[in-house]
Image (cartoon, rainbow over all chains, first blue to last red; front, top):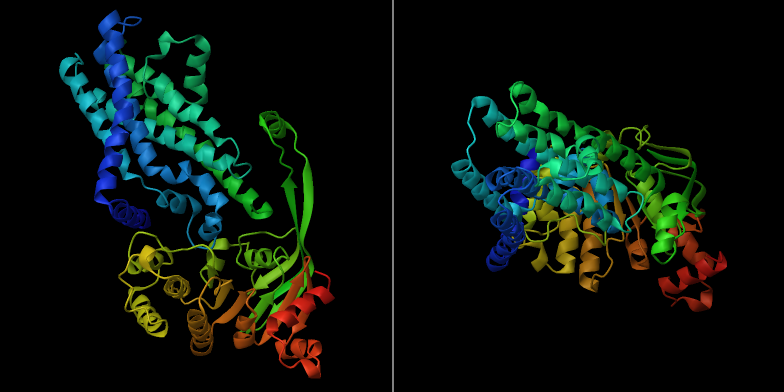
Length: 260
Length: 269
């Protein structure tokens, strides 16, 4: 952990070397979430509600997903760009150092420009809290926090799987964007507006339902009882990371027996 | 200290085809070709030696270094470094070795050299007192004091290579693997780097194994050369002997490069 923060400090130092370029990057990173936010706003402006969900309710879901995604992109950038590490042979360097591979790969790419979507999602969340009508309780506060943590872990897991695939092939990895960017777009909206297949996929395969849809219903007072169950559901969804780590280990073993 | 016994390394390489259809097909069923990178390779190295490891591109030099440094597990055969198999416990093994890949940097591009050194200190868990002692010594040997606070991107190639080698010695490894340490350097820097390697070997008793295409390196540095071609060790002995075998009396002025080219031709590699 100490080593990881050392990596982060140095990467921050290198990323802020060029002040103007850094400022522009921050601005450009802000545009994408802003546009998708504007999309939601215009949609609700026109239709009032979707399937009984109001705009501020969807804002909560939006903020959770965008925030999780931003934090995951920031911390798991190393896994996102891992195919480059294989291509350039830098992974050999990781293997000749006396530390675990996960901490070294994480440490290879902390990406501070994701700060802008993060801040933007904070603003949206505040809007939703102020103008929406959530009845705040302690359970609900814990729940909201867990939703963000769970989301971050799941997105990181997807990046890890994407990185693992590059032990076998580095062709066509853009395919994995379906699961990150694609899911980000879908998981913003409550699951019950989608066909059943998508709902099942997003609950049991890649468990985004556990970080937004199900707890969200409790958070917004649509269902009662079992508050703590819903509050910790996102952390159960975060167990998704376990098979991801196992797959990663398997990939590393494969690499050492076959080379690049 | 290092022994390499009957090592075979066979890579399974997926055939690649052009186009989307072929790419999709290759997910389901792949055609493989087998490349034998090392064939029954055996050798041993004693503590304190400087070994020159030469051979044309693709002969198996990097594969050997990767096996010795615990990155790759060979298909068959046994290897022992300090009495242990490198790949049995990667983390314990790599604490004892330093590796410099000449063409890839291990220093962070945009920040001062000293910051990368401190990161390495934390990675290798070097004690503060040992780190300070090693750092002072390496700064002196490699004359780093003028540019240790300069970002890596502003260094010349020669300066950078000195930093690279120093960086891989911070944790006092007992063996140093150098993969083409003088590649792309000008004559002055080459001579400097060679002198540094000699000094490290003598004063710190570090065993050095270096691969190179620069025969000047071999001449200036090594006690022994191993020539590899097509995955097999073709020559293992003193460089002087190899030279005299290929130099006729009337051709005293031949360059080392010419001699090596003839050796390669002789073994048809």
